Length: 384
Length: 81
Image (tube, rainbow over all chains, first blue to last red; front, side, top):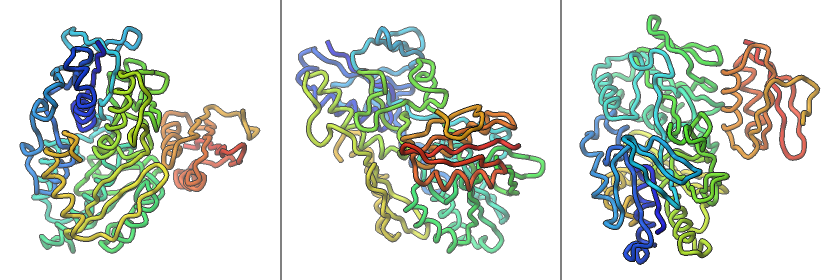
């Protein structure tokens, strides 16, 4: 019996489990293989929707579905928290003591946010990386009557790299619509020397920031929040006052992979960029946010990685070489990028080809809206 | 291997990492280090060759040197504050 255990029921874990089950249908039915997804809540969440909660266009209950409803019937779902991975004996231990042995382990353990790493974050700063936080930001925006809005990043890498820029653009649009723009300043703090990590995207976004009069502060790595003076401080020694503060919280990989010795303290799994195998650990693959690959931590990345992991795991079990267009990962990522005023653009790239975003227009904005609505029927089930 | 003739407290091998990876690794080391520490970053990313010195200047540290060797750059920084 070849047991495939997938840790995590997000985009990557769900899709890869469904694809492996499809490839190994015969083996599973004969009892020669099994696919098990372990997920902490048994609930699948469409995280890109959180930003839209903050912008007032989405509701938390529409962003979740039972994980079971998205999985192939041949995939077993175990609801529980993995607390230990014993690489030597090839088993995963769940909270409560249940053990799952594996021949192939797929780590789709995602990322977690740690706002507590910045003192006063919880009381002073807003973010949109969870449903409650996004709702709290929405309430703060509703109550906002003008002043200084500062949007910054308190640690890299983080989920959905365009999101803070998108939020800046969408907020600016909202302020204009509410007649508050003249009474407000918008400041965008980038940790690096330009607006966005990828140069071509930065070249697209920087003039839009200027046009919308959103002040760009480069090399601003947020380190401190002074709640009395309402000022944030950067590692570089600069300060910026705020009336409304929106910060991307620090992110890390899952604790269980750190504890297992598979990842360094950052939690990002050292992963081969093409085979997606965890370096030095044959039989263990990683995908999605969990990896240390120089790619966006985004559902789209997991979406395009999953067919490769599925092919390689199925090939290992069938005793053949990985084959076809999914034999290796080429770094493909594709995501929409909102720029406000009902317009968006598309970022599509791979390891060798940086994105060349088309001029923002209404079509790409609508594309993102349609994608968000149809996600449940397409991505997790491997239909796109 | 050390290119520049200064005692280095910590070397970050960020070869194979793309911008802003090497800069972020340096920032982490600066955060964790002590004033006076000399930190070397090895990088083969062209963007980092430009970005790291700019960041060092803005952040008030000292660029001890930048040398290219065997397909990578060694960028040496002293933490000043």
